[in-house]
Amino acid sequence: MAEGEGRWLPDGMAISALPLPSPTDLVNEGAALLHVLARHDWSEATDLELVSAVEGLQGMRAQQHAVEAVLLAEIDARDVAKDSLGWGSTADWLAHLAGIRHGQAKQTVDHATELVSHRPATWSALASGDISPEQADIVLNALDRLPDDEALRESAETQMLDEASRVTATELTRHARGVVETLDPDLTARTLEAQLAREDRVAHQRRFLSITDDGAGGIVVKGRGSVEDGAVLRAAMLPLTAPVPEIDPDTCQELPDRRDYGVRMWDALIQLAQHAMDTDLPPESHGARPRVAVTVGLEALRGTLFERGHTDDGLDVSPDVARRLACDAEIIPMVLGTDGEVLDVGRTRRLVTAPLWRALVVRDRHCAFPGCTRPPVMCHAHHVVPWFDSGTTSLSNLVMLCGHHHRTVHRTPWEVRIGDAGRADFLPPPRLGVARDWIRARPRRE
Image 1 (spheres, helix red, strand yellow):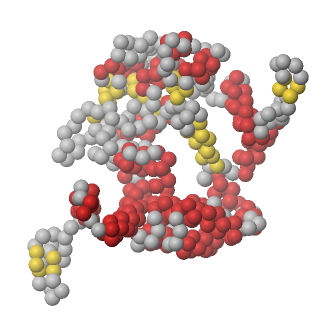
Image 2: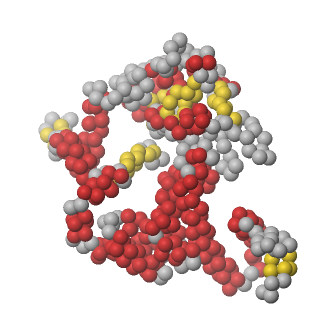
Image 3: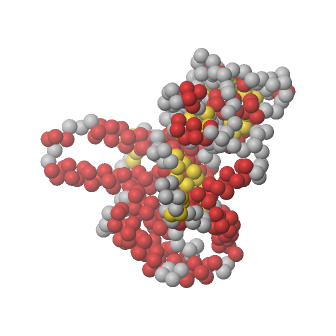
């Protein structure tokens, strides 16, 4: 009997002709056991049994995270989510699959690659259950704040892993800050690194900016860039941060500017952006000058109905904010059908005009591909029936797709049509044992 075709006793005698379980089989068996445990009646268990069960589950949780890191790193390295599943990134796929936030999914994928490729000590501590997933994240985030000196980072990693076996994640966060300050108290290592050209390259490669809805009527801005980027921003913003005296409406006397430095910096940034739009400095987009575009119902604009407005890049605004923006704005009316669909504004030309693009934004709001929420600024207008095949440039023949999913529809068996109420339907590629059917949303676990 060939190796792998049966189970063997120590003396070499086969006791079963069943094949050895695959890793996927083992995962499914573990899930089945947890399913049983979740429905077990623990009311008759002893105190020791309860405590032991929780201790065991915490170890399993850490080990599951370690296994997941290996799998995610391999999936990301192979570009499986993009090439085989039709997602924009591994993080997009994981966020949908696990039902978690996109930011959390991105960090999970990034940390998985870091653990497997560069931090074997942290991964081993996680795989053995010595540290929790939260503690592993703290270690990786702390190391990211240190200079790009591997010896320095390994020393910090060793210290934090040793401490992690005795403290909570909260205490480890404080300890991690101390480790970073101890290893680089006077920023000497970073100063030395600054002399090298590669620091600028590293900073440039790590640059990013995100603007997200905070869920409480505001936004959160996060970013990172190079020293050169910072110099440009400060040079542009600092002249606009000078205190501006206020006028007391009762006495007409000047009062000191009550804004602190942080508020004045924010106001300067907004003033710069507004100046750029007012002076036509940004490039054109879809044939129209850049504008803060808000889609809101006429009743809400009039104040007779409470309805949130939506910007082109996916942020929600209150009716008050929409009305305030409308005080100094162009208002483009659009007629909607009884089911909320935008009526056809067809054109005889191939390129999508600015009014037609606006109508497409109102209808689709973001990339229409199932599971994707990339905003209109990252999207294209895709002809369902190609222009060269007698397809018209009209709303009934257009769908909004981000760059990745635009390529997906063109290069893979995915199909798209305009279905009921003018909304796009998608037909997934054939899959063994799965019937093809038109969809607008994807199940989290396909």
